Length: 194
Image (cartoon, rainbow, N blue to C red; front, top):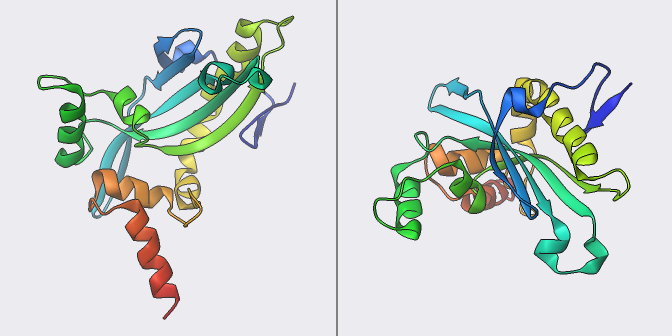
């Protein structure tokens, strides 16, 4: 049976999400998984550790729109580890949450400090049930994570927003030169206009 997630097709049985990811949050509004494996990016001038996060949100809960009944958004994200982010970002997280607070990956996800690798809207047929539909989706995402990681440069090269910020810009703003990813995209545009 062929499976397809984020445009990646595979023909073997999916692995179980619990074998590759730890559950961080699981309630009727959202579900968050963090990869058990910590990945490494090593190149001259840019070295950081990261994890993959699967996050699903109940769209009706967040939008309040009955048109979103039984709809979930699910995304795979590349998130630098807390130990890899620049001190100014870590200090900002502590300031937001209170002195003595130890920031975690969920804090980075909640503030948007990640690169989105893939996104889908999923209809959860009430007759099939949440566990059957979303359980299969989580397993499929977990299964393709290693493949996605082998192509992370492709995903990081893609424009992330309408002004052309790339995943590399976001990563550099968090772990590299600290330059705003918006400023990096605008500088590229200005250079192209010369």
